[in-house]
Amino acid sequence: MNHTNLERLTASEARRELESGRVTSEALVSEHLARIAERDGAVGAWTIVDSEAALKAARASDARRAEGRPASSLDGIPVGIKDIIDTKDFPTEYGSEVFAGRQPDFDAFIVEQLKSAGAIIVGKTVTTELAFFGPGRTCNPHDLERTPGGSSSGSAAAVADHQVPLALGTQTAGSVIRPASYCGVIGFKPTFGYTSRSGVLAQSPPLDTIGGYARSVEDIALLFDAISGFDPSDFDMTPVAKPSLVKALQDPAPRVPRFAFIKTLAWPQAEAAMKTACEAFAGSFGARAEIVESTLPSDFEDILRLPQIVQFYDIARNYGPIADANPDRVSEKLKEIIAEGRTFSAADYAAAHAEQESLYEVLRPLIADYDAILTPAAMGPALVGLSSTGSPLFNAIWTYLGMPCISLPLIKVEGLPVGVQLVATRGNDAALLRAANWMMQDHQHTA
Image (cartoon, rainbow, N blue to C red; front, side, top):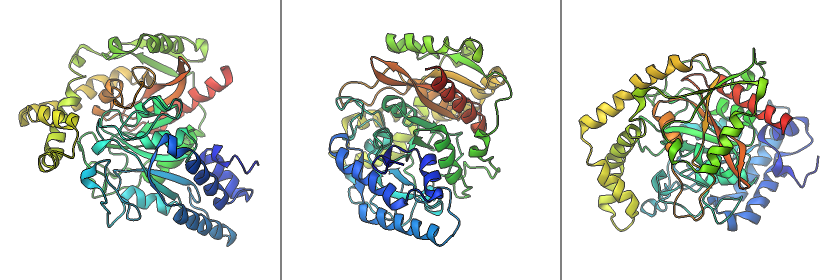
């Protein structure tokens, strides 16, 4: 093992090295901290990093192993936390100057679970303003003149730039999947309600979902096995036992995988080069997989608007008082969305919310025989400039329907990464990761 390239290890690889005794957590964390020190001035993925605390925690992890104590699933692995997720050891400022210096008294439920799993929390990653459209300072590691996407900007960029192997994000429209696509990493948004949101900034509770970033599907499984414990204080979670995602990846595919290639109503607005690349990818499998081009039913004609009604109404309700009290400290874009959200009535909101279930029930039987939907993750490669974080139109409909999604870095457009998005029916997170893992391995074998 080359100890000068430890930051290149995936979390699963690092875990195996730690368990074998070939690598220490202190060495692993030190290499990642050195990478952050070298690159964060350019990339800008972090709001705060505590090197001393991270190294102290790493040495404690090494001591547990030296004493022969059983290692937890993420013991000694460095992780980044999006700055809308409460941490008692770090400020949580929501990407907004209104909340500068805000210091939580308690960890969010998922942070508690990370700590119980032995993860080393390195620091907090940059988010856009209140996890919406107002960009932060983060740049895309593939091209510093381009956006990393949002709102989980820093988490995606930090993983893409090998500053940490794992990071947490959140998604209300496209805030996990789009940055993953732009930054060329794997981004996963599970079924709605799969993970707790206690201690996480609420933007739109019917949509808000915890997500995460990694550089392998195995790592995604490892991360979400660690943070998906039941939290009775989050009423959108159900006390249903979840299968181990890590074990699910070990199950062999029972047959040739089947994917429904669905372009969605966002397709006409996408960049031509992305559409060409996506169609070529869908047509590249031959007999290795069955790809069937499908369309959404006519019931879905308003599917691009309905998520906006729910999200914008909730933004007006939850962020409106913040903007009203601090008009000079919130962006004009946020003020515009709050104003638009206030044009929707409670009846409009209730109707759009109700359509979530009815439309899902229309779609579910149509895709029941497929392993996943195959669809673009973004309109194209990352946009030039940092003034916009891109469009969530290829993501918001699946978030609205509560379906698990994953972006895989399998397409290049003009030398830049673009994600392939796979989507499954609710609760089939394990099957989705199996399909994603098959696709990643197939791509490696055929590239």
